[in-house]
Length: 276
Ligand code: AMP
Ligand code: MN
Ligand code: MN
Ligand code: MN
Image 1 (cartoon, protein in one colour):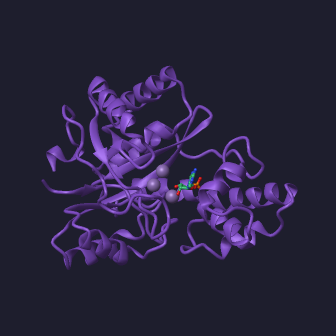
Image 2 (cartoon, rainbow, N blue to C red):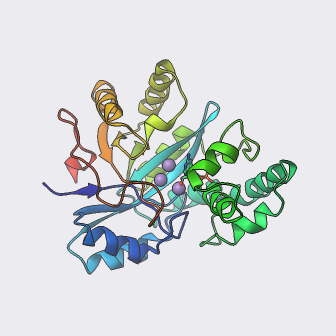
């Protein structure tokens, strides 16, 4: 059985490894089909594709789009996109354009909570001029001793209801799906188990995603428990979505799943790669 890992990050967003290094690590770990899916950016895909040509791995060009839905941020994974597509590129540029102002507001909010210098501190962890994220704030806050691990920083400071969280308007769900389709790609709801919604809310989200033309959901993710693997496989079957799998790898020491560390998809679902 080939191994798939269809969700990961590089230094073009909030990953710690350059695209070529992530590709080499995936190949060394026995991944057969690998997608780089940086947040709101396709800048690393050319380097990753070139590095993948030196391996026996099949490279899948991707991205992870930030979307606002009701009061939440939802992530949509794009797979098999043409990175040179203008519609998608313009859409991603529009999503990224709000990030710096948002980061300044996060910095101000943290200052009001007694943590000065966070914007400049986070900037020191940024690896692509085009993208600053909460991960960079988290790394700064750990370095400055406000928490032991990035996971704890999020819990204490950076999630909804905490002092360093600021609301932000990302893309709409229908826009994100249409940009991905314009670029010839498939749209997949990332880590659905992570959203704070009731069962009714989840059905509403997935229903709107299906109405927008969405293609799949991530069934296997480090954000899910084994019980949720089964739960989201059932959602995939009920809604007629393709099923995807990804480690959401960000780099050594970040998260608890390494590239390719995923079980097989539960029986009874149609994999997102079934028509590749
Ligand atoms: P942003 O797109 O700027 O809102 O940043 C979101 C990123 O922060 C995600 O892609 C993750 O890499 C990271 N993140 C979000 N929530 C958590 C968490 N609870 N623990 C660790 N990292 C997180
Ligand atoms: Mn991330
Ligand atoms: Mn995500
Ligand atoms: Mn991700």
